[in-house]
Image (tube, rainbow, N blue to C red; front, top):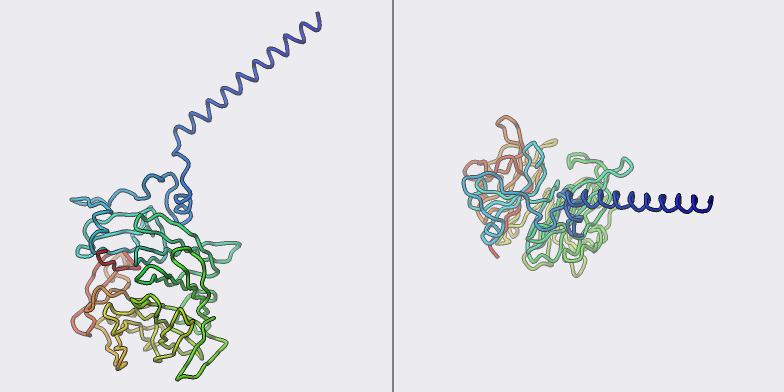
Length: 363
């Protein structure tokens, strides 16, 4: 009799366990149905870069409210502008895309959130800082014209500058390893050359051989920043500082060499016709004059902007230069301004509440 009661108890216990299991399973099924589907690997990377998990089918947020909404595909099949939105709110830091001839018109916000962004040759790079055990690291992610983050790369330091070669083959990033201002004589940088297709590091520029007046030189305080690429995808210009003095240098990626050209040039940006560089020239403590220099004659032309420009400029075309500067009108948000490249005219607001502009011509 006791055996029958024991068997009945076991039977009821088993049935209860089965019922409980079915209820638990049903709960998780229902919960899963209410959540987004598991994100694809690219979208997980996108979340690392600041995007939203669960948008595997579309990495793009809705277009910003405008009278007529353009699609990303329409925008990227004509000359367009990439920049970072700095309006306060949930979308601050997101990469935005606009038509180049109407930068304040229709814009599409992407899922990428960055501190510095650049795009060329069908490839983009997004820099964002991470805090790890109270130390800062730079997270770089690459993306294509679908704006999905891919190929994460990390290095020590605070993100500062980023560029991609016109053919989309190479990218470069600069991070502050010590200090966080180019006005600080004690700062130190790391400028890393990357394969933009694989995300693999090709080395720190400090590993390149340096020549000045045909003689190889080496100083313990070499610091590079502000790289800009030539159309050939192999030549680049950059700032190299040593003995507390910044110099314009020209580099050769294949040969892994650089040659010192001119003193006093910081954050160069090569013009589309490759005859000039726009750069910031320090003319006082913490004050940089936006300037253009001819690469043959080395003649310098100060531009009409009178504010201190601590930015790597971007050429709108051969006659105009874009740059970031705080807007004087309240609130003082960072904005993109434009000024003639020949020293004439006056600066004008190009895109309000934005920074890190990248001009992309039609494919």
